[in-house]
Image 1 (cartoon, rainbow, N blue to C red):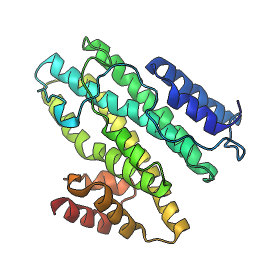
Image 2: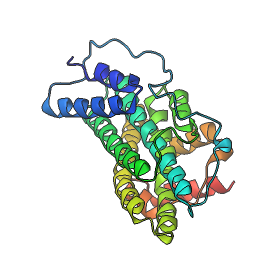
Image 3: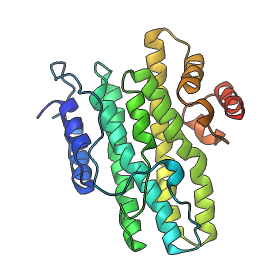
Length: 268
């Protein structure tokens, strides 16, 4: 196999976490070595469907996912599981961005293949931590919100770049510092160390979303700020939540005016 799109589809379809991690690593290495390249002759992308994932965890509406305190090992395991589930979904989201959107610059495919590899490494670290806490991925309920947004934005790269990395994944920049503080208060430095790595690397992933969203807007002759706000209103409605981690979002390519408008929208 020499076509990157089909290799991405193979990663996307893998259901067992170990297989998805192995294929992701191998695909990234093959891309780096030049063995894989996007092919103009590749079959067109199939309509979006559920990605490969294990039978567990059970997927429930987000409001039905229990919230547990961090004062017990089980509560901390539930938090680690929730983040691991986000990272597992993020592997699929990155590979779908490679598979689904054709004719993008080579740097676009490099960014999202690299992102998939990072997310796989994050998932592996969190899975190890879950084991240390006496649990495994699949032991707690989870929700499907990230992939539902992928389905809603499968028709256009502009919407995907705006709403998955710059909204849903960027939310991690906002909430992870609070998680770190709470975990540190209960003495869980092991999990803190992992989340600090993830937070640092997620800034680059959101920055990739910003970069390619603006590329799409430039290509289409639209204003990035207005387009972003319009997409937020259309897709997020009243579900946009603050507060926002301004320093991290600025590092990830947001500008001050954009953040001011984002804050105002979250308050309305």
